[in-house]
Length: 304
Image (cartoon, rainbow, N blue to C red; front, side, top):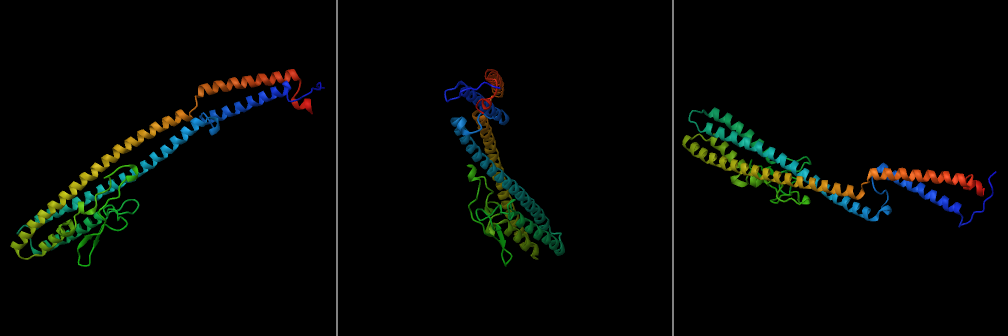
């Protein structure tokens, strides 16, 4: 039976037990750090590093939000580029038809067939002008993008009803990246691409050859201006996509640097940590063996 032992607050037995408890807690703490790969598991373990890590995490959240804004802006511009390309193709076909219709050899029936295709092209042009993004917002309506950019009036005319201010990726710090508003691409009023196609339809219905020829000259001039507008718009959109690409690269680099800084703030030197853990375990095992040998039993045996 173990020899009775007097224990008080100054007893070496309690001091040894406290030391083993501290070693055991340190082994457990270091084990958690190794499992997570982080220098601290609670802010109290390293307040300065924890505060730095929190700042870096907030910065990374802002950068991530900016990246999402840029991705949305890039998607809108890509859709706008496709729509403008469709509109350009429609106008090029309209020019071909206008040149064909200017020939003296066409019969009224031939011109009627051409007129029907022109009407189809006008519908295609309107669809392109009212193209939407993945959220259902109209690309060319400016800030008033919850409604179509262009609307067909009862008299057959087509009118722009957007608001001449584009909503871009300002949240990401990028200006001039939104799709150009409708008037810069498709025009407005009597000089719009829609009006020119309307003039082409009227010229095709004109029976007087001389008057029809005069109208065709005006139509071809209008189609050229309308096509130039779209080409200029494509250049604007391409420049916007390039700016977004540059900014996306900058943000990606900033996030990489932030991740590296966060790793430095929270990261754990695994080799040093494992070496220290092994040393602590050895020390704890030695302390436990010494405790058992010297006191011939556990503390609870002694005081039980």
